[in-house]
Picture 1 (cartoon, rainbow, N blue to C red):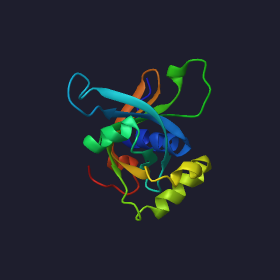
Picture 2 (tube, helix red, strand yellow):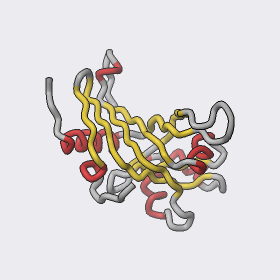
Picture 3 (cartoon, rainbow, N blue to C red):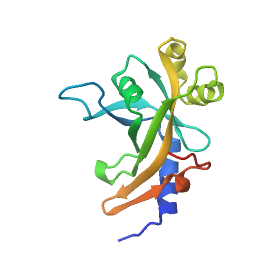
Picture 4 (cartoon, rainbow, N blue to C red):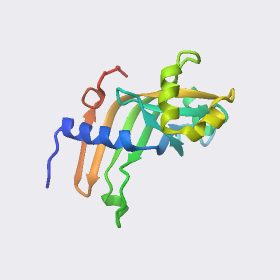
Length: 164
């Protein structure tokens, strides 16, 4: 069995994140009653900022955005872009942290970064219900296939560490 250091796992995770255009965003359901507090997963477009932080362009009308407004805790699953006969052998990483909206008017650079990777988003990026959001990564989990996985801290993953 191959052993990875946290830094090796973080480096692999960063490579995956840089290549990913979409991922599965897991949020905590808001509200009251039966569904409150349960996990909710949705597919979102994503890119990473220069420090490795995931960036999203989200609509306030979306369920996942409403969840984030109530509870910023989230996980993001990203997969390496490869075609394997066995999907469980595909490299992947889960980034765990907090997702918050970037203040409108303070998001020019992040907007440029996001739209450079998702030019098709330009058509709805101008709508008033869309805003840029950033994940503050607290920890990562890298999986390189069966039996190869490792947790790492944000300081190993990010080029500039922001505390959770």
